[in-house]
Amino acid sequence: MSGYIMIKTDVINNSSIQLGAAVKQRSMRLFSINYFLVLCLILLLLSVESSLQTSIIWDRSTAWTLWLYKVGPFSVADIIIIAITGIVIIRLLLNSSIPASPYLLLCLLALAYLCIGFIYNVGVYTLWKTYLYDVKVFLYLLVPYLFLNSIKYSTKLIGLLSPKHIFTYMAIASLIDSTVVNLSGTSEYPQILGFPAVPPLLPMAVILAGIIYAKKATHKIIFLAFLGFEFVSAVNRLSLGLLFNAAQILLFIFVLHFNLRFTARFIAIFASILLINLASLLLVTNPFNWTLLAAKAEGSITRQVQMENAVENFKHNIPGAIGKGLGSTWFEYIPIP
Image (cartoon, rainbow, N blue to C red; front, side):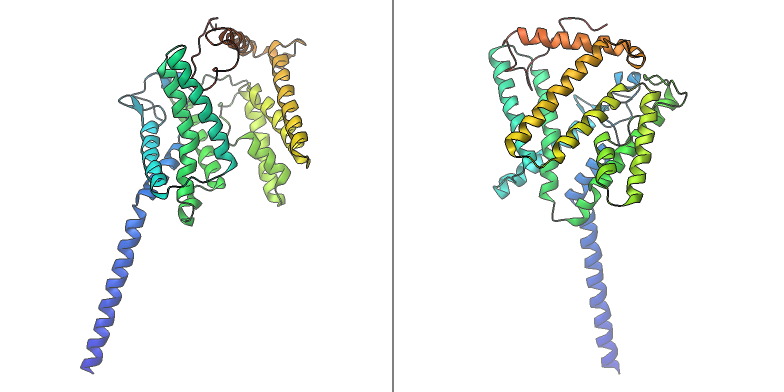
C-alpha cells in the first residue's frame, strides 16, 4: 500500500512538472517576438494614419494616434515598422529564400521606381526627405507581407490577422477616430445631414465585392447595410470621391468578370483606367454645372491646381514621365488656394 502511494505520488509530481512545463512553454509562446509584433500590427490597424481634425495633427507630441505621435525624429509607427523590417531581413538571410507571389512582383516594380528616384536624387535634384518618405511607404507595403509569410504556419497568429479581423480593426479605428475628433473639436468635413462626420468603416471595394460574391443571404444583407451607411455618410460629409471610387470599382469588377486572354484583359483594364481618368477630369471641371459638384467647388479648384502642378513638374528637371515616380521631388509651382 505504501509503495502504491509512493508511485501515485511520483505520478502526480511528474504530471505537475509536465503541466508546469506546458504552462511555461505556452507563456513563452504568448510573449514571443511573433506575438509581440502581431500585437504591434494590430495596434497600427486600430489607429489611423491621419486624423480627421487637422489641428490634432500639427502638434505631434499630443497626437492620439501611433501614426502621428513622435519619439525623436520617428513616429511610433515608424519605430514598429523599422523593428519588424530588421527581424524580417534576418529571417530572410537565414532562410536564403524569398517567397514568390504576384504581390511581390508589384513591390518589385515599386523598388524599380525607387532606384530611378535614387538616380534622380544623385544626378538631377537632391531632396532626400521626399525620397526617404517614399522608402517608408515601400516598407509599409512590403514588410508586413513578408512578416506574415514568415509566420504563416502559426494558425493562431495568422488567425488574428485574417481579412475579416483586419477589416474589423479598421472599422473600429474609424469609429475611434471619429469619436476623438467630435469630442475634442470640429471636424474638417461638412456635416450637411446634421450628424457627425464618420470616415469610411469598410473599403468600398470590400463592400461591393461582398454584395456581389457573398454566398450567404445574411452576408449580402450585412454588406448592403454597410453600403447604405457609407453612401449616407458620404453625402453627409460631401465625399464625392467615395461615390466616384464606387463607380470605378464596379467597372473593374465588370471587366475582370469576363474570362479573357491576357492581351484582351490587358487592353480592357488599360481602357478602363483611361476612361476613369478622363471621367475624373470631366468631373473636376464640372462642365454641366451639376449641383452636387458645385457644392465641392473648393475641392475642385484644388484638384485643378494639383493637375497643373503635375504638368509643370513633368516639364522640369527630367522632362517627361520617367523619373517622376517614387523618390523624385515634387514642387508646388502654382500655389494651392
